[in-house]
Image (tube, rainbow, N blue to C red):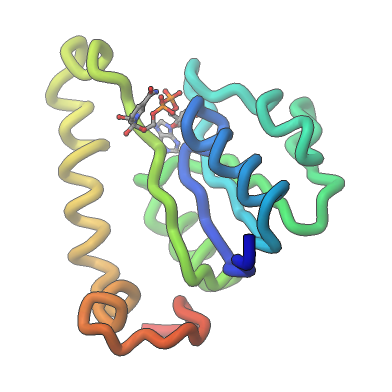
Length: 143
Ligand SMILES: NC(=O)c1ccc[n+]([C@@H]2O[C@H](COP(=O)([O-])OP(=O)(O)OC[C@H]3O[C@@H](n4cnc5c(N)ncnc54)[C@H](O)[C@@H]3O)[C@@H](O)[C@H]2O)c1
């Protein structure tokens, strides 16, 4: 698969995110930064076969790095964007449906509200894509 982007995959210690990260690393040339808070659902072992040490979270794969962070931590996310300069983000950090019912206010704040707020705060990042002005250049290089 001819795909050599710089991808952030949030929630990539989870079920879907880890499958995507493995696919990107095995089947494409993409460089992947995983961002995961490692909740009870995060299983770093699922990235072992693509070079992640599940104890230290260090990677022996030059195309994979792991950042243990909460996607709600704006400072950490700004840092990830500035340093990694992604041109693609796969947002798969999530809470499962039955968990949403247990603490609805908290889960609305960190889930839906936070995702919408992210788009409002980071218009500079997605607007060129939305306006079809993006032609493959590296995004995330500045506001
Ligand atoms: N599992 C399925 O069959 C399935 C099918 C279709 C769509 N989806 C969707 O895919 C997405 C991911 O589902 P999943 O099954 O992989 O979930 P999962 O619970 O297995 O993984 C979620 C991951 O997100 C991480 N996470 C949670 N909150 C975080 C935060 N605030 N910051 C950083 N990381 C955080 C967790 O640590 C975990 O690794 C969801 O939106 C889900 O609706 C899942």
